[in-house]
Image (cartoon, rainbow, N blue to C red):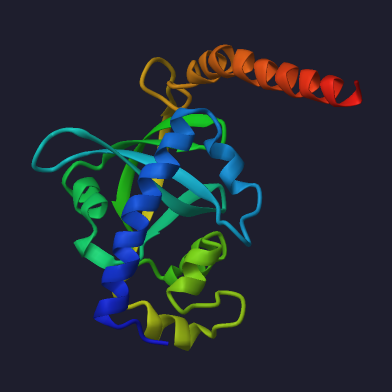
Length: 203
């Protein structure tokens, strides 16, 4: 199924909002849980890239696959994707993948002789996103896949060295104990009030 311009625009808006939610989950320390069911929800990593115009730090969640020990992802909307343009202008990035954080170098390998195999692997790790784009990576033939994905850019993330320190995944994990501290008394008060009401009815 060929995606219409209107459908593509709607999908881009949908993923723009979804991406903000997903980055928040990573910062809260629960991002890796999103990849527990790759066939359904997808397999995710976050690319920390630098805005080519603003110079500001940007965080972009993307689907990925590990093939022969190397990390690959794709820009499904093609070269118009802002994060793709950012990594082409500034290929030194950071990736959050699983429980790990890496300095990495991004490289466009869309002309790789094994492009279709790599792309299929990434799409298999895309869960519902590939289905929304009208592609079933489990059943589509190589010829069909090539016909459906001419705009897709294939990116290799070459891991350089592990990273630690501030500004990484889980930097907002402190929110959880604060929420417990704030909400637990309210929950206990509600339980106590219901218990008193039940006691009065018995009388």
